[in-house]
Image 1 (tube, helix red, strand yellow):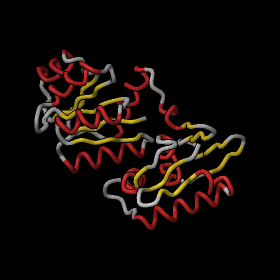
Image 2 (cartoon, helix red, strand yellow):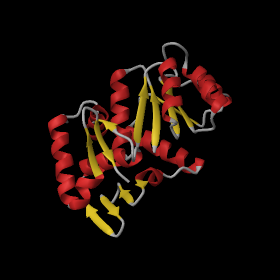
Image 3 (cartoon, rainbow, N blue to C red):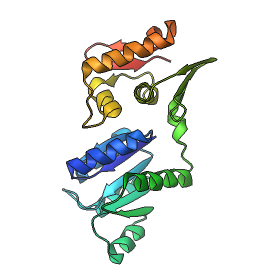
Image 4 (cartoon, rainbow, N blue to C red):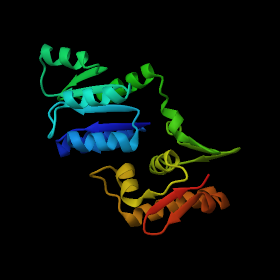
Length: 220
């Protein structure tokens, strides 16, 4: 499930993004009004999390812009805790409102609740062709075969499956697997792919393709 996260605080953006990724979600990020609109049009997220204080236009302005084009769930974030802000957010058709500071567990619970209410299924983005990933059970099914995978392998597979048939850049994989502040590098990623290919046997070499100077692609 792809989540648009918009915040101009780089530290909070990194921490929140990592928490959402750990919960099995794909995160696309932006730090301003303009970049958020571009990412929204390019990535087609299933839900948006918007900070109110943004460069180039407020989160309220961004909420209005998104609502003109989409009915996706919108969660507003703010450091303020005033009734007027909550009322304004709801009047602009935001679906929920969370005041900073907040715990990652609370944010994830709110996001999952919004996705359930919207009819979105987290698992739907974990399937492509014969591949089906169960992020919670750490199982990959390929047709009748079932493979046990590690948490890191699961995160690698999740991004490849969500972009099945398309190359995924190495830097994007590194961010998704290890987070913005994680310890991953290109060599560790190469080793992770190698172990996963070995685990899958002949299917692994065929399914996970190296795309020279780009990254990796899942063949379906």
